[in-house]
Image 1 (cartoon, rainbow, N blue to C red):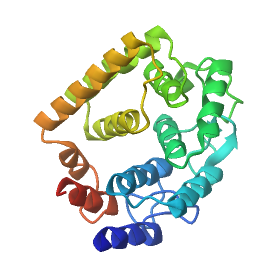
Image 2: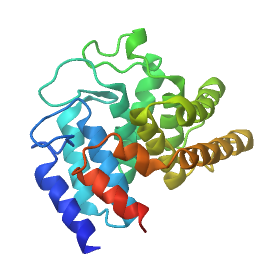
Image 3: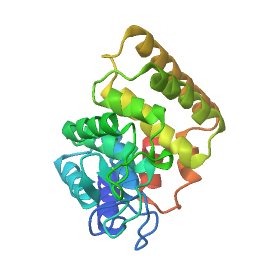
Image 4: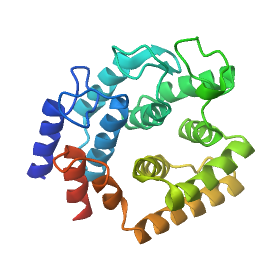
Length: 238
């Protein structure tokens, strides 16, 4: 436990920006800082040491990239369109921090804009800024809403494709999705949706395990000394 706490302290002191966005290398900001922050916080939750201070870290990081409800920047000094993967992390991080209103705002925004989030245009419709149906289904599930049929089908099928064909980065995103679905639940879904998602989550885990597991995917993405990889190795050894 003490070693995990030391890794946690190292992460927040050396592997985040001033605003609290996660880094892949110390001192080198990237376009997915909120994503790497939430990956680390997921591992803290698995290890049982996620607390109110971590909630505050997420809130501060979230505020640094927030523009309007449902619209975000990549990082505080960036004014381009957002990285799509970041919204997945925002939804999961908000659930962990018990800030469910953030997920509600994102879902409401997607309903109004046809699935588009782009702070540079006030989310005018543009194909390149439209979130995939699988992502919209995930947001809705996290908000205790019912996804549309095609989006739900996309989510279930996408999990299988993710486990079979995707690269290490995408497999790590798949881990974030299935962890969140398991952690926060989806019992509110109609039986057919619930049963299908339960089956696909199980298949995802089976395929990933057969392909050497989540730790293998993390090891091929993060540098050896990264706190995310250090903590994942500790979890893998539990």
